[in-house]
Image (cartoon, rainbow, N blue to C red; front, side, top):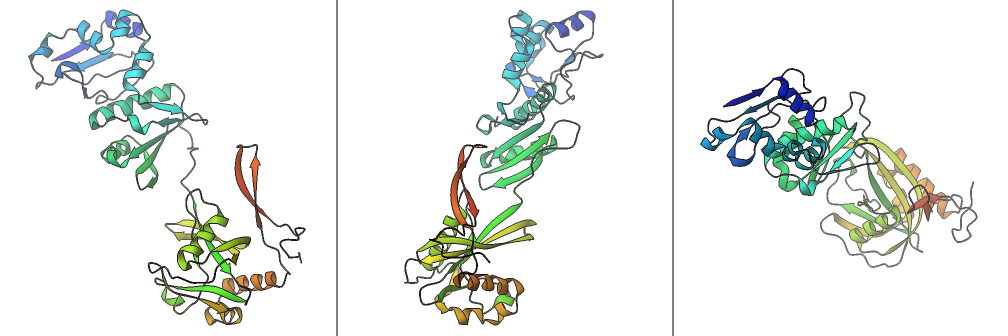
Length: 362
């Protein structure tokens, strides 16, 4: 059965429920199962020609035949027909996905209240995008947990794009305005650290990794690794040295850092080389990553052919030798609070006037 309302009464009804000039949906927009097992696919327009179309599947049972124009509208928009609340409030509460506004004029969809049913999700996603467009919203952030991964293809079909993914979710975005997208891109860098640990005997803590490029075969190198999420550089390098060698250390300075591009998954790489003071001596190798570890005399470490032949390695060694000779000052860590975000953060800077650092500028 198909109901069409195109007469003057319907136009008045459209205006009375606040539909004029508000929503434009495709013919498949409202595909969902409402009450009484009725399959409904109404098309909402801005009161240009066709106003409302309700199509009922032939598979619906006979109770649908008793649904009149009045009962259909009352079932769908009960408060509007009775005149107790605006249509926009009912529509928002019933058909718009639960979301909060962000500070940039966009919305953050609540992942905990996403519908599990794909058809209902499709319906509500389309309704929500139309609602947010009317409200002048810009970017839409949709976080889909792993257990709702079947909703990803639906979001893609509706125009959402991948932003980033973690172990438990995929983040997707949608830019509403017809103008260049202003949403920030995914994280562009990975952050690595290397610990230059030297003891009172002028011995350097070095390791040989189990997995390495053929060109680095036989190289004894300083312990390295990646910073974890929400981890400081100075705590991360101490942790990495501890995990690979079991040596406890104290952070002294950031001596230098390297910036490289297209390193892994087309991301850029920041690698911070840090000077550490050892607090223990007994080495215990991490069998998962490290093949061997030992204390190596500085001279022997420097004279390795792979270091002497590499401009980057050689320059790093020159910096450390200058630091040991008190002719160079690195960047020490200072934790400060900024009024921009009222949060404690770490600022790394040179403090040549600090007697505890025992260095001088050149």
